[in-house]
Amino acid sequence: MSRKTEGLIAAPFTAFHQDGSLDLSVIQRQAEGLVRAGVRGAFICGTTGESLSLTLDERRLVAQRWVEVAGSELTIIVHTGHNCLSDARALAQHAQEIGAAATGAFGPGYFRPSCLADLVEWCAAVAGGAPNIPFYYYHIPSLTGLHFSMPGLLTAAAGRIANLGGLKFTHENMMEYSQALAAVGGRYDVLFGRDEALLSALAVGARGAVGSTYNYSAPVYLRVMEAFDAGRMDDARRHQAKAVEFIDLLIEYGGLPAGKAIMKMSGVDCGPVRLPLRSLDDEQYRRLHDRLDAAGFFALQKLA
Image 1: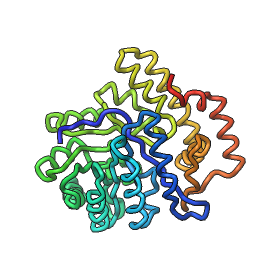
Image 2: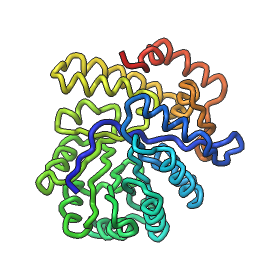
Image 3: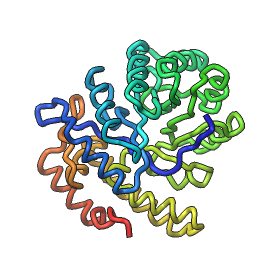
Image 4: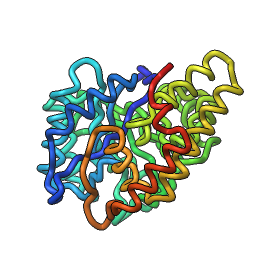
């Protein structure tokens, strides 16, 4: 699996009606917006997509619609992670059947594998549900509690998972990230998943990244990448600092619920979040909008 991803992969929100039911009608507008912004693909039904708040049927419906609207312009990676192994494997099988480009899955957080070998076996079983397309292990220890070595996982899985594509690495440990890039002779695609540290990842060799803020701020990150590639480090740092400023506001207003609010501000209303998350109230929405505007967020969303 030597092909390496370049550019930005968005982690889309899952759209709901105001009553909390699934709203598939929004997906085409989401996809069109990503293409216009220069995004290369979508990692769907992951953390940002509230995957574990969806039923299996809902996850299948979302995946199928994304594949239908993506055409040749977006690469669709379907997240299939689940605490139930057979459900994760079934979602992977469905992703392959509908024509997704790849699957990904984080490890089970309840119960957790007790050693790296057990996690590799779990990944092998999930990946085996879609043996004809690449499988990415989704490393997000802040949510799963799984802190195993990712260079170690790639090394252990290299002879065990024939369709291993690589990792979605959503962690702050840049030493471990650089080691994962180099593991097994640099064979695997290691997508970086912390938007606020994209420039740091580029400095150690990242070429592809997956993130939630690429849904509405892709132009800012594309400027980071362009400036880095051109050797204009002061510009790259300036653009990354602006992204961090926006992310700081996003975190202050609740993270994922604030991200859905920003989608609405940006013209694509993805509706509310599902419990136990809570959507912004009208006053929070107004304050966030005003602070983003004051920070230059809306003016920076168009590429020069």
